[in-house]
Length: 219
Image (cartoon, rainbow, N blue to C red):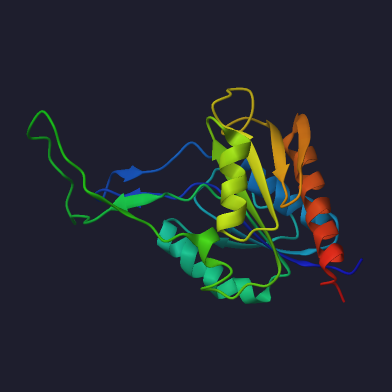
């Protein structure tokens, strides 16, 4: 099979509250970085767009660092036209503060109300807004009804596959070195049993390439 062009997103985003505080999540970026490493190892061209992590960029991978959900949205929009396969594994913030003061917010009362607004939906923008026609793989991090929510996401966002994991478990997912995932396709669900994220990543990359062959997108 010829070399594919992968676009992979990874890590969390950070949404500023003031110059010293921000909203983020527990994503370590390990899964996305493992995916980038696996795709590069298999001889594919890889662009990794990542939020802030403490991880080293895998060898042979092009790297584009971002911080906020808006920066990741813009980067993916710019780079999507050049990809054959997009795997969006980043844990992008769903909300951000409506306004961000240029000075640190001082402690005053017993409570503080923080007004939030929705961020742009990157995965949901891939088909219509960005015009992406390649293989689209999304991630669903859920705490309950994992398969049901993931299948709804697959359909709403016109994905070819959703990688779903149960982030309520302490032994897999966020911060962990291992994962166990469901691969949700339009016609079936496959289980990838608990294993190192590096092993899971190779299987996901291989499945994505199979989808390319199935759709006749490879040259």
